[in-house]
Length: 408
Image 1 (cartoon, rainbow, N blue to C red):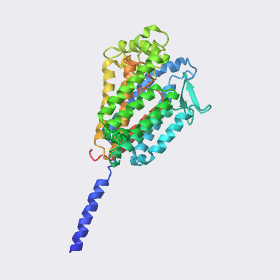
Image 2: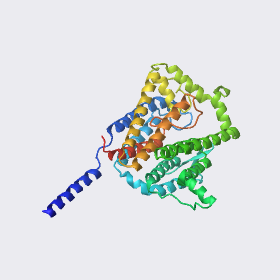
Image 3: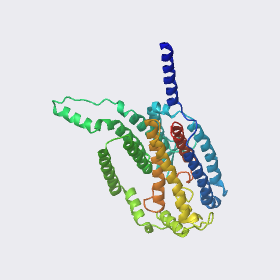
Image 4: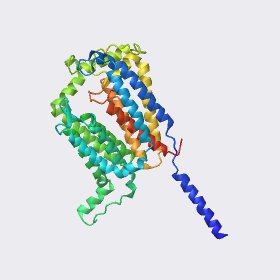
């Protein structure tokens, strides 16, 4: 009798444990639908924004094919759907054990841009690798940063505090540093310094800013004391001030941002034509496909300044609706982070969604001349096949984590 009751209790415990470990097979439907909708809208707007420049082919790239940019982006979008699906099926927890190898791989790739024959340079910067297709290894660096920070912070409670001899001055000072979390931050500081240093060699200012934002977001979500963010903000602000004041490149860019009419046919042309496109759109726009600034007036209309074409053709109402969709995707992402089953998954979503949100905000700020030109593209909208693949892989990772979510 006693043996039977013991077996029943063991069976109940086993069933409860199985229920706790069982993972739902469905991804988060709202996040998935918002992603698919934004990718579709991005393709539509890319077709509208790119066909004039593809037709005129001033750079001898498209062969006067008006669908050149759209067809290539559509192929990458289809590949992106496959990648997103495959990544959503993965067990993301295995990435925690690969955090250091992925970080080292990213560092090697970011160094390889300087190797002749492998790296590709444009506009005085070495930011691309030629193989297997042309891509920016800084994108891998961002994911490496997210995975490393998330994996380490997920085990924060397992860290044993350092103890120093309280009798000596140095020992008491060491204990003070331990209490305020200085020693805990050393590995994170080392990783971000290495990444920023590699980006400075390229150079790649926009990716540097994005990595600092990612690091700050994950550390904040991980529970690092707020005082360190104030100190970090002062340090970053001081470094930016020094760069602006004592670097000719940054100084000229800030001056051009403040007064683009200084060079209306050169460096100030994008800002001027972008504002003209936004203003001419009015409340409801001139109509899809009817925009005028994309006819070689606005440089890179299909890339970083595609949102200006959105404003021109869809107007303030259409642009706000698209931004609302982005906002809903971002809010849903943070909701998934709050309800993630484990800390590692939660922190990874925070890093991915913060990066995504910052890219949207920074791109809109540049297009409206709120920020200087930074080279940050609009996710899902700007032309760039490998960038779209990476973005959809990131969305797939969020969906993989959502499978573990006990709340539907």
